[in-house]
Length: 129
Image 1 (cartoon, rainbow, N blue to C red):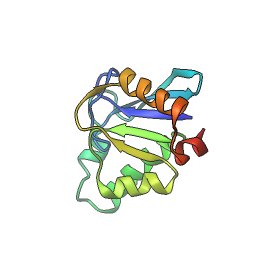
Image 2: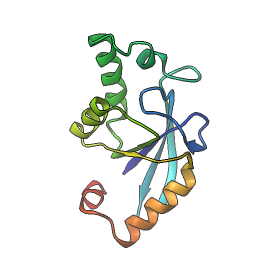
Image 3: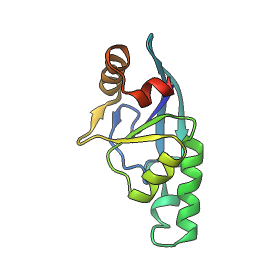
């Protein structure tokens, strides 16, 4: 299954879903994980299309929808924060949004997820695999 990470520099989970300009995507299964691609939403830095349209109704909703649609092939997305409407959009697409409390190395998160997959995956992860 594919897992995405909201990241500013490609090393840590350290971004908010909406403002993240980059998501690092990995494929993970019981045998391990591998980097697949970077999904870019900004040439560099933060996703201004989402950030600068906040409070602008349909314009903002469309920017968020486009981000959700491009990430909908992932089953899990890790981030620092996410707004309720964005989380609901992801969930509706079958994507599980997971928040981390502090910036964490992507590799550490992948290792922990791999251990969970190998030992005691919850039903929703078993289904995604």
